[in-house]
Image 1: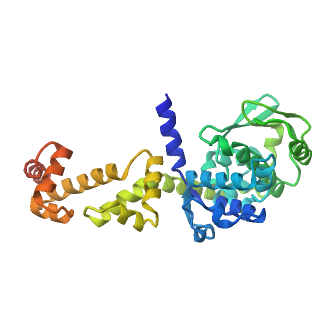
Image 2: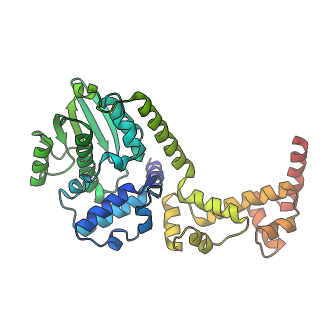
Image 3: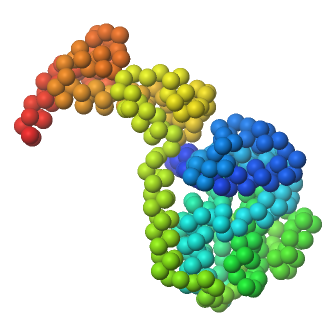
Length: 352
């Protein structure tokens, strides 16, 4: 079970996200007196990416940025809340457009959770109906403990800010349960939210509202527009998932080169240091050697089957000699490249 959990955490950290949220956090940190290079330290996020709405980073990079922010400002109650006040519907891109054009508040909330990976949150949320109440339950698994308080504060404040932007009234919140200890700043923020009942030390953070408010029509409701932008959300999310993080980029570069490429060259192509490339691949549960062996092995098989001689394939893949290539191929397939080629060329010809 532990290994499955670790795999899930690595996969989640490798998920691609827009740089919009990172840009908002950097803006907040600089406004609080931190230096931009300190906030971006070890994130591998270039400053030019923060102003590019099409640029993408991983969730793991965003975690590192949040660690830098919390470390620089101190993990004090309320820090995340102030950061969350900078989140507004335009920062959600197509997801924001899909949500605000939804028919009802419930459908808007369901859309936001269905495509939560396109939003500002780093946690998972689910909506639960409990009679007259509706609970928005937060699951923090995978979120590093050292940034958990900042993250939950930021999300709560962002949810409040966004609903104030798009709705003509303040939604009545029955109760807030937080996985944190009491602090005067939470009482103050509770007053802003209009919440009298705040439960501290909860196992999970939960926002509790009145179920009937979810049937409220959205002011800019337009079902056709909402469907259009929801399709945009689905397409964007699928494209990000298909790219598969840094390991997929390494595979693509190895294939494009069509020969043995060293880790230093691949790192330079990705504008990363070798150390950073190693760490990013480790986060995804692999190594450069494994990817190179896998990719070059597949290339070798394709070239041999296509009809090239063993000598040509060895040269094409950058091996110093045929014997070096033959030794490597035996390690991959348990047979010589010549034997593999004779077997599989016949199968290809038969299919044609």
